Length: 290
Image (tube, rainbow, N blue to C red):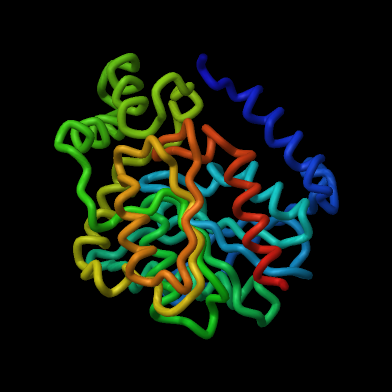
């Protein structure tokens, strides 16, 4: 049966009620700010007050911070603080430079932490491509990163050639809608889940700039996320970033890497299983606060 957006929202609302969250997610304080980053302005949307841990959320390849709204509200409703910066080129964030690499993008996140986390280290959460930036930030600025959360962790185990073709087709807005949405479903969603919730929000130009930034940066520079504690929330049906990536990371650092698997979810993960993702993330945040 297809997973609809209404059933996902209902599942998330039920989770929030069962978890005894501090506030209703629809009543969470929300703000927007422009952070004066060293590489230009960064447009940041925040949820909740910076009284607990701040969680900085970095979105997937070629997509904006709007993908995090449900998760950010759930995190804030649980007493934490969420900061969702728009990637370069989205909204009012500065564009990419000609030679931008992952170190530059990690510096953007460091600037967001300095502006939003009330002088404390933050948790850096990256979804898909965002997990590369999150890990790079942890490696470069351990003083600013309390822990790392990876949603769909890739980097070392390659996808199949046909999946790579589907990934590229997902960004081709000139394709007929039915053809492109079939590609989105193939690359990003578990079988039977509703891919139409990700019909919009794709930026091919940003995706190309992010891929180039990643190619300019050695994988080993960011792979282990420095020495930070790491939670990997890994979708079981992920064909873009197969679960072997998460296992390689756990085996490399078993004392600080924990992997939680999510059934009935592909690389998109967030719109497919919001309650499971929120539950894993909030439990991890509570463990960090002792």
